[in-house]
Every structure is written in structure tokens, then in C-alpha cells.
Image 1 (spheres, rainbow, N blue to C red):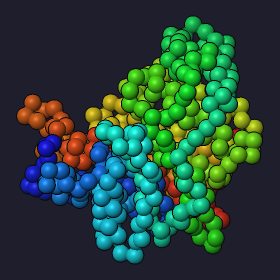
Image 2 (image 1 turned 90 degrees about the vertical axis):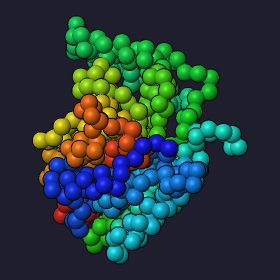
Image 3 (image 1 turned 60 degrees about the vertical axis):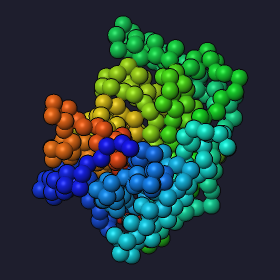
Image 4 (image 1 turned 90 degrees about the horizontal axis):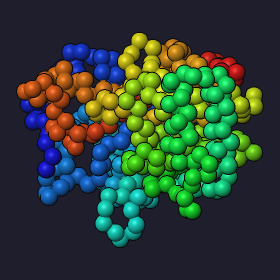
Length: 405
């Protein structure tokens, strides 16, 4: 079995957390004025036992519970065919939070043919029914390939013109342009005869209940995109992005007024100035600028750095921005991209629980040579760190953001 911290090491870790406080490691506080939405790829979150032994240590479960108990709504990736771990987490949260009523909505097994060997996954939503109602729609995500392709190529061509006209000669722009032309797999209709997600994202509708009948009506998409070759990975990302745009109000198509993407997108950006990161940021900006005034705006806040904090690197080795929570809406209660610098004010915030930093500072997370002891926690806890977004409880008097942002 994979390595685990001993119970004594977990006691040291928990003592460090108690001494330093939640804020030092990005653990969000819970309050009655805001709602907390989160996403976490919890590695191989399936059966509770392996070869008759617990899959996770008691300390790992306490850490997972400690974060999840802050959340009103959690999207889990890498759930397994066996939902025992998801159910166990639900039961722990209901026990530790008096009055809570956590419930589960899970997808079918995806990424594996029925009856075959291999590791398939379920997507799971875990939500507190005291604050969140499930809706009427729950489905795998499907789309019209030809329309997706046509719209992506149109948008990419517009972005190419923008780079050539406005940033000619800039080396970063040139690298981004080269990526858009060749890396995405869409340029000049480079799409295979049949295209579908390896792991079909799961969509379900929910309503976050607020004051005096106010609410957020959400279409939530839980996704874990391909982790294979880069060209395949970005092909899935752009197909998903285009689907989300089309289902966010274009041509009257809409599952809910607010669409939220939560998941592991496997976008391997090793730095803030990575050419592909720059291209995606500019692509999103271009989409927003071309939308009509009443059309959905797109915000990927985890492409930005929260004010006063370090850039978010959500894999446990802190070198990639794999995980994202993004929204597509013209609802002015949701911040636009240019408002991400206001995080920490008026009930809006976002961040990541950096348990790697906690393990390092506590001591047990380091090897004798000073390097992180990944083998001690990547299977026991996860190889991804959870990310979260805080929003005010829906109300008549909450802050509104400019639709021009």
C-alpha cells in the first residue's frame, strides 16, 4: 500500500495548523453571510478498504473532513465506481455539523467501457440541503460536433488577427500564436472524424437559497479532462469551453441563468507567462469583448492571483494550475474578470487549501534531504489541493458588478 503519515505525525500536523491558524494555509472560514463552493480531485476516492486495510489513514480523513465541512457545495473528481468514500464523507459531515443535511448527486461511471478493466470515474456533487436545493436536470454533457468546431475556429481566427495587429513582433505573442495555430488541434479543422470527451463531464442544476426568496440558480458542470498528450488535453478544454458558452444563453439555450464549471482541467501552466496560459487568457478576454451587452460573460478567477497571496498552483507539487472554478453568466451579482482584484471584499473571495505548505512547515511532510515527502500523502490525502470560491448569500442588497466588466 502507499505510504501514510503515522498518527503521531498527524498529531504534529494538526498542532501546527492549530498554532498557525486556518488563514496561513488557505482554509476558508465558514459563516452565515456567505456560501462556499469548492472543487477537489480526491485521488482514487472509492472503496474504503484495500486488501482488507483502510485506504486512507484516520488523519487523512480528519483533514478531508476539516476542509469539506466548510463547504456548502463541493464538486469531487476521481470518485470511483464504488461510492463508499463519498458516502462516508457525507456521513462524517452530517455528524460534525449539527443541523446539516449533506446529500450526494453522482454521475454514471465514465472513462471505462462497462465490464472492462481499468480505472473509470464518477463525478460527485456533495451539497448541504439546508442551503442548496437540487434541480430538475442531471446529465452527461453532449454536443453537436460541427457547430462546436465552426465556432471555435471563428474565435481562434479572430484572436490570431488581434495578436498580429496589436502585438506584432512580440516574442510572447508569437509563441502564443504558434500554440493557437498548431497545439489546440482545432486550427484549420484538425478534428478527428468522431470527437467525444474521454470522461464525459457531468451537468446538474442546483439552487442556492438566500434571503427573502432570493437565490442563485446554477447549472454546475463537474469535469476531469484528459491528462494525456497536450494536443488532446487542449482539444477537450476548447470543446468544453465552447459548449459552456453555447449553453449560457446564446441563441436562447440555457439550463440555468448561471453556469459554473468546477473541475480538474489538466491545464499544465508552469508559470504565469506560459505562452499557452497567455493564449487562453486572451481568448477569454476576446470572447467577453465580442459578446453583446446582455450575453454571458466568462470569468476564470484561478488564472489570476488573489490579492495579497501567491499564485495558485493546485497540484500537490505546486507547479501547475490544473484545477479551476469558472462561471458563465450575465448576472451582475457575479464578479467579472476585471473584478478578481476585489477578492476578499463584499463577500467575494477565492483561494486554495495548501496542505503541502502545512505538511512542510509541520515537519512530517519533508524527507531528510529537505524535499517534500510526496509518497506519504499523495495517495493518502490527494495529489490535488482543493480550491474554493466564496460568494455572498443571495439577497436584495448584495453588491452588484458592472455588466461592462
